[in-house]
Length: 318
Ligand code: MTE
Image 1 (cartoon, rainbow, N blue to C red):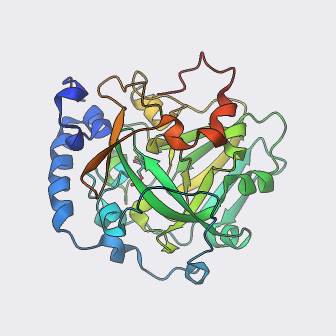
Image 2 (cartoon, rainbow, N blue to C red):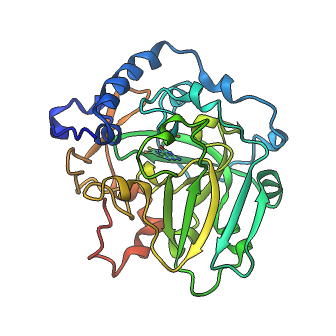
């Protein structure tokens, strides 16, 4: 593995693709190429428009509690700039992600629960009420978007799972299929894994996403089910989830296993704590050509700050 030793601040930040760079120097080159390609690509959303049994449930009613002061990032911009490393190390993975079959799709719920079970994505969607939320999305690579996600509170899934009182964490896992996801043939610690504490999972902001821009979500966005915790860096937002497990052991996440000196479990947004290789003080707002100051907890402190009282000794900001 090449470890790209140049410091983050030596690279123009708008060209930084740090996680890819960490993984492989080639990614820096392909990431740069993708930036150029993104500008001339037509909307890639068309790739995500195959028949979807849940399509009639969109658009869902917007939950006005989560106000946003920024413009929604145009779908076209979002669709041409994704991180989904299973399908490639550039931002331009939408076409490759089409290889993923998202029906039938089963999610296993297991671990410290009253009764482990499997549920089909459409039965899961029918068992909840979908809503739309405008959320900010801040990547650890110092870019951001504002996205109209559709989904349901993670809390609903947790309650339906009936976890035992001894469960302390929720662990999420992405599909594993190297035949359709070429990067999974490599040596990184696949499948992609993420985790939250039970308190974080029960927080009102924690959202299971099934759609975006008023329709079922494109495969490149993580169809048919991904997570969004808007006060955390985007790498927590695990895509294409197949397993949700309850455990008393803190899960080792994909990025912790890949680069423990740079990425941690908590990953709360904090402009004052730089990444070891670049500043987190501000962010490129994709689609605008502008940089804006980054805010503590990505601006969601009123909803989440209390959860971290007494945990000051933990590496909450990486
Ligand atoms: N989930 C999986 N399975 N694989 C990934 O590579 N990348 C993460 C996260 N979830 C990733 C993933 C990172 S680094 C970010 S910033 C967001 O997805 C990107 O989401 P977006 O492409 O919808 O902007």
